Length: 287
Image (cartoon, rainbow, N blue to C red; front, side, top):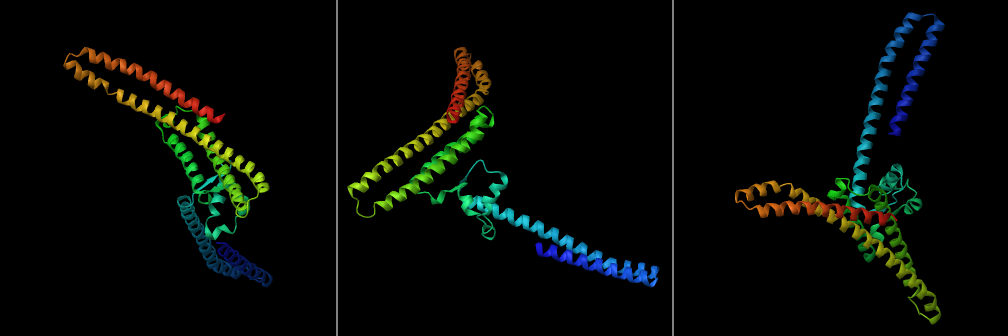
């Protein structure tokens, strides 16, 4: 595309130079009318060349946009990573572009590494823990309660992505420190070495327990949201009660009709409680 742009500029410069030279020579010689005619004749092909170059540049730019869109979509589908939620849209695209082979050389990978966690680089237990957290968040996003805007917007839009990012970063750090521990233990482990490594290993165990607790909190929140969803589905089913009341009315079963009505009232209370508990669970995450 840059080559095409340079060619267009060179062509334009040549055309302008020719026209200026012809005009100056004609003015000096005193042949105004023939010069104007000649300039007009020369200007026509120059204009065609410039138009062609402009159209080609637009086509090249459009093709580059289509190619880049396909490459970015391929990265989104094939590269599993967790990105810092504070990234701007431009920075997020830079992260994606760093995985495009022809664009990767442009990216400062040392900087980008601090803004993303590659899931494939985590050990299997860490990947499994991260997957549990992501699955819980996904279930919240896909819930009826979320769709009906019955949950805390702050917890869902801000806190949940931040939770996943922080869990991923902690898991990566833990994996790196565990590798250090493993390397230190490959040779002879003396009491002095054990005295140094054991407190470090204990710190890793405590950190892993804390991360596991965070994942379990996300799962509890997802469970509360699922309970709210179940109550919502029950209320939707309750909307069909009039059909069953009509059926019972034909059999003159008034006790069953009253039971359906009481069930509807109890369900409304259950739904309100379920949504309230889900919202409280989300606020606990924020805290």
